[in-house]
Image (cartoon, rainbow, N blue to C red; front, side, top):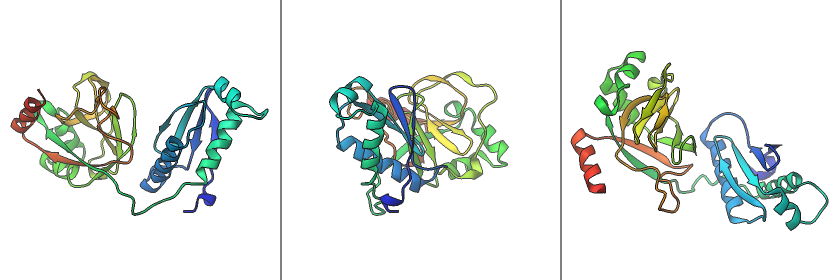
Amino acid sequence: MKSSQLELDIKPLGDSALIVQLGDGINPTLHKLVKSLSEIISTIPFKGIIEFVPAYNNITVYYNPFLVQNSHSGSTSAYDKVSSHIKKLAQQITLDKNADTRIVTIPVCYGGEFGPDLENVASINNLSMEEVIDIHTSSECLVYMLGFAPGFPFMGGMDERIATPRRETPRLSIPRGSVGIAGKQTGIYSLETPGGWQIIGRTPLDLFLPKESPPTLLQAGDQIQFVSITPEEYLLYEELKK
């Protein structure tokens, strides 16, 4: 796709943010456009922009309207100035099919106390629990965005044979590292929080790393490969972290 063919839909979000919509739906190609524009925004400074948050098919850009107005000439509003800047940057978007993609392996102990909903996921999809594990570990998933909690990855590309609706009654507390399914998505709870995803396993890896830069293990655009481990291997991972 040429950048000249890309039509951005930019809308205000309050008085100090805007949403840049790059398309509709959820697919890897559209997400590459989101990732490309995000990288361009991060490398070309524009005084007044505070931060930006990439998502499935859009980017939210937060800015300081007073700083934008005082730092850039012209009589237009801060929203118009940031919008114009984003449109100019979008002309540099490229889709490099040969770009390197980071593949991250996530060890998961499935079922039992680590995955209390594994049996339910299997029953809803007329599968055995072993088949659910085989399917969940058989293909790579794409991290589309981080959100809900610091470092929580929303992942697409999961095999639809194990797609399962959220629980009717959310749990008040889900352990850190829990791996869940919600519809066609899979995700990992980076912190202990309430939640309604179907929990099928748990990883011993830490996803939120506040003392490191970046402070999250995963980034949007990463490809995730889940690998099944035993409870003994899970405990060994935990011991090695001490």
